View 1 (cartoon, rainbow, N blue to C red):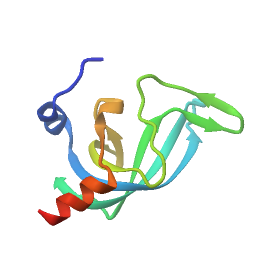
View 2 (view 1 turned 90 degrees about the vertical axis):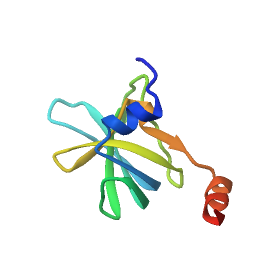
View 3 (view 1 turned 90 degrees about the horizontal axis):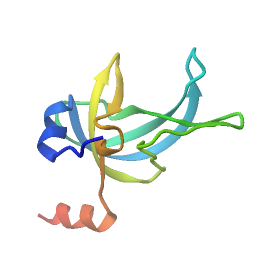
View 4 (view 1 turned 45 degrees about the vertical axis):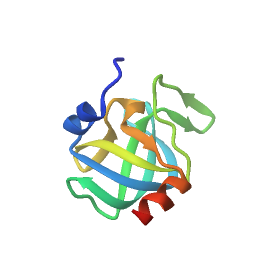
Length: 116
């Protein structure tokens, strides 16, 4: 997969927002593919508008002892904050360029940007 520039990610994204992962769970579709549902608390919209909480779906995860892994993939954890570049399809959010659709923001970066 080719590395996308910030401009390319922004152009491909329907929405770009800052947010924090508040919850994650895994599920299977009708073909038994496993996905992870990441609930994101949106703190600031940069492009487009979103609800306060969005469901970001990523491929892979673990359900009932069965795991599916994808590479490259975006693996998020609760309390992780960052900038999300997402496509919106049928009301669900998907990261642009799989793992490239997220740029982490540290707590210190959040505090310093709040002071600007």
